[in-house]
Length: 110
Length: 110
DNA sequence: TGGCGGCATAACCATATGGTTATGATATGG
DNA sequence: CCATATCATAACCATATGGTTATGCCGCCA
Image (cartoon, rainbow over all chains, first blue to last red):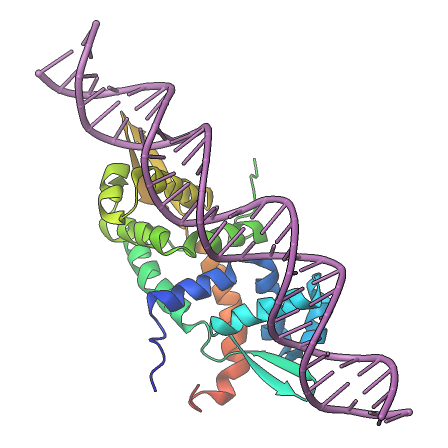
């Protein structure tokens, strides 16, 4: 059953929106660096309350950036493989046109 | 005079936030594809009011994604060279870790 | 089985955000 | 010099968003 095109504007929107918050990005970065984590662990490193972590993770999940696995009373979140694909795709398309327009775009590190 | 590190969390935040709105992304995409445009022209293709276009462009400018050039009574906006650099940088770092974490699982589907 | 640990949801608040119309500043052209 | 075009800002509104504390559900274990 096709749910939704992975590169639809809605998905791009959701992903950019999900990535636009610093706290959420920090949570995601932690998952990427350290692997699967429980809400408990994520709360410990986030600086915000546990309910807020749950809500942030829900948003990341709706944006297809993480997956959740319930194990007993714990929920384990992981960065989702291919999660960044839609955004990467957008960057590839417009980054290409962009650099094509500005041939001086050599070192992206500024 | 160092204003602000181009890859500071604040800049990343501003860029992701700027890119998280569909209307704003459409404006930026138009600039990238068609080159420098006046507010008048951008309003014509945006589907929103002229004041809204001005505000969107202001936000894109604060995010260092576009530059503005005043010519008489017109303001011409362009996609800024190296504009996407901070976000691309972020994607490079975490996209790399990401795919590094999942290379073993590639092709399993999902 | 009763209490506690782990998580999600509800209720609430302040602020940010996207949108509008109205207004004001400034060039430009007749 | 006056009318108009171009743009930005102000004032306003509805909704979304990030945060909190309170609550409720459920699994674990002593």
